[in-house]
Image (spheres, one colour):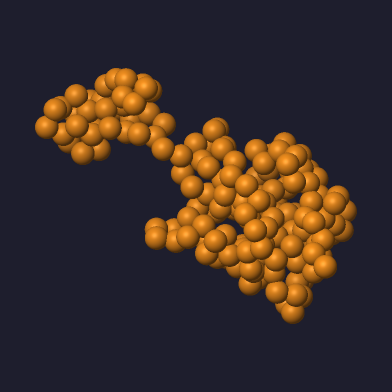
Length: 166
């Protein structure tokens, strides 16, 4: 992201090398603002519900594209609480973090994804109106753990499915 003016004092920004990288900064020595352009933390959930993996679909995506439930962290929120909150907001399910799957840079959006395996409470059944076992649908679909398509995500093929817990 590039800015034209300093958000602190309004001076036109310049580019300068700081910390081994070219960064936007304010030329006013009294201001000294630097735009560090740090990545935004995002949480993602591989959601397991009733032994199946839930993938989400955004209506703006191509028909065959599905992804993880993801969202931004709130101020003063731990990643573990944030991912459980996102699962509840997006799916209406109460989840519990089982493990951190990994950290993944998503350079195109300047984000760092913290992906967790989240198991939801089995007591709540889901409406199957917009859910399918194998065919894409408007919003979401079920797939079995080992058959979860990886597709062209930034997560890659590190974890195509969830290990079965005994």
